[in-house]
Length: 429
Figure 1: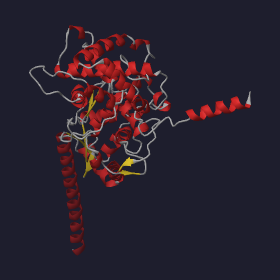
Figure 2: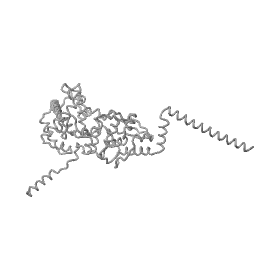
Figure 3: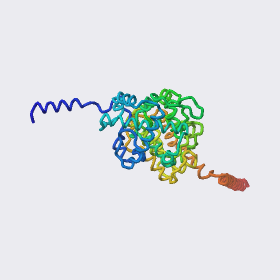
Figure 4: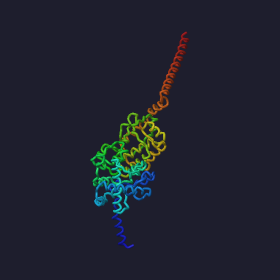
């Protein structure tokens, strides 16, 4: 090979050698070692959004037609010139590309079309959902199984558009809000909170000062609830060990469902009572937790509060008996039916996960629980309570047995004393 040609090729390669992940990156391909555990949990089932899964799965192509229909409706509703919209999207392309962890194999024109159609579909979908503004043309998308799967697909880490893109395109539009005599035009974040309201168990308000990078980030924020300044301090060591539910129960720990705390992560141990907010284990629970954990692995490795929670549950739940105890205490609502499936779910969520640090609150709680479990006096009391005072009848029988034993002992002592007395009297004579 010609030396000058070789040097040119090497220099060209060096020009292309730019960091693939920048500070602006927030949308990632799930790490291979995590993805292989359950690929279906990270792969869209009915609709692709963004570049990672675009045109990769034949079963997703049917939704392209519906995306175009919704995009057309958005343009008509938005009253925005298509040429203006295209120019704007071309201007934000560099920021859009920097949001992704991998090089995108698309031309500039292909990216513009992708952003336009996917953004228009999402905005129009959220708008119709907010105002319940459906037509006969929506009959297919409103089928419960499809509507539910679309909502889930929009929460997958690999199936995202940057939130700022959606919000800016919405703000550029001139939508009319004269629906149901309501003249107030909602913000895009209000539309988003309304669409994902089912998952907002903490009742987080959209007017709070919240920075959202994409919808997976939003579902994580729903679970964290508290703003950054109110979250527990972190310590530079991973979780070490926590006894299982069965072991803690045998040691005398009382499990109680916490109905007051809105934040799912608000675990608390005080005295001998372990309070845990209720968790509904549904068909999509694994999907949500897997994608939130994957996001923390990639973007929040030093603020992995969801991963902390998963780690605690992984230790607490080892067997179906652990699940049954938590169900009995109303801490878990098992909609999967099979206790073994629930145990396997939580045992698999923490596999291949790198845990660099840990919530200080959880760390202290685990130390207190383990210390309580190691105390032999606590275990003895729990054993006595379980074996002899497990029910009112058993308690009564145990008390009666103890009284009978005491009376028999007293009778024996009295008999011995009587024999001694007789011996002493005979000795005196």
